Length: 216
Image 1 (cartoon, rainbow, N blue to C red):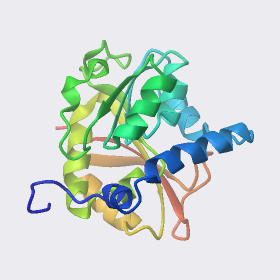
Image 2 (cartoon, one colour):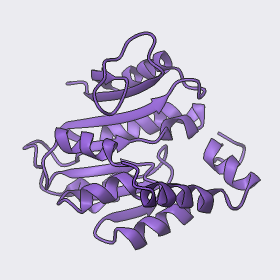
Image 3 (cartoon, helix red, strand yellow):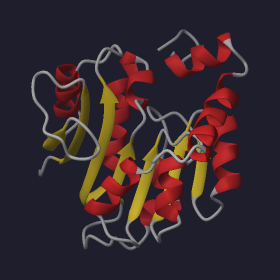
């Protein structure tokens, strides 16, 4: 954490270096969609884990690409991202979901309406699923990773699942991530090397991980 009391996230540094960074990022995804590229694999993955009507937190939601897809299909979606520009984009594109500006390491997830919705899983209040796709975790300040994961663990309902995906070679090894999950009270259920369920092994250069809270 910096002397100002704020974490030094890579995304914020990129924005400081280039004021057009967020707009260019959002435009890139719009262009890919216009070209007909399938951009919904992460959302379909989450949709296979929990039924429509379930509460879903899109953690590091950007412009709402994943959460917006789910919201349009009947999920109770909330999204949190530290980028004000991207949150504004999400709010315009997917007004049926709840979008908030915030740091994943410090945000009060209980303040989100979807967190207190009647759980589809039959468990306690909290999210039925939390998804953090698009390499989000690799942009988080290393000192903020465990606080962020602990906060996400606390936001899960009793039977909730945390789904994350990020690539190798981005400053956050898969082994470090496993250690951080364990330290944050989360246990790995499944690992894949892609959003279309390809098997994960020592040579995989991408990790899709499904975890849940460790039972007390």
